[in-house]
Image 1 (cartoon, helix red, strand yellow):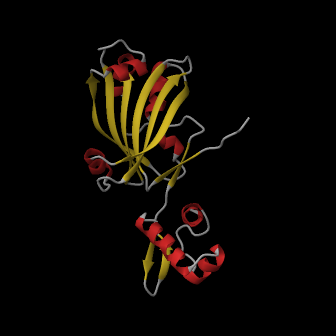
Image 2: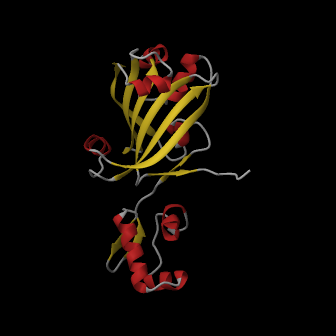
Length: 225
């Protein structure tokens, strides 16, 4: 775990790792234990071991904070360009659960939006979004390719977003998610479920976002007070 963090965020990022003998001394571990740790990092796609060359970091995870309510482009703007591929939009008849979460009458259509989000050209997330009809239909006339939905929703609603309830869990990539995210079927994904409210408390955006687990990391700070 310590070595993984150094590879992703520390001095070892995008560079050469120390020799096995140096890692044995640093961690006070046996050579076999060090080799097993390096094999785990290689299986995760974080390092590559080349005979006669050494071990190098080859992947980078992007940080996604959990302390502020931001769209993906706002969150990752320091790390590159987020591009949106809109795969599907339209009115659907939602399940009772979705109607209840959004506070809409049962059976009333809502707007559904499915997007692939890419960072620097690589698939990062598959976003499934449900929005009440009165806000969602005007949203469909906006540029969903170049804008975060959060920014557009605030403009349409005429007020800022206020808060969101978030749940994060690990899931395996189903065939649809694997194909759209260019990930192996059954690969580990981070699934973020988020219900966002306007500043007046109205729920307006229910999202199920599947992130490639090898390209994103979630972070935040906590207080015991």
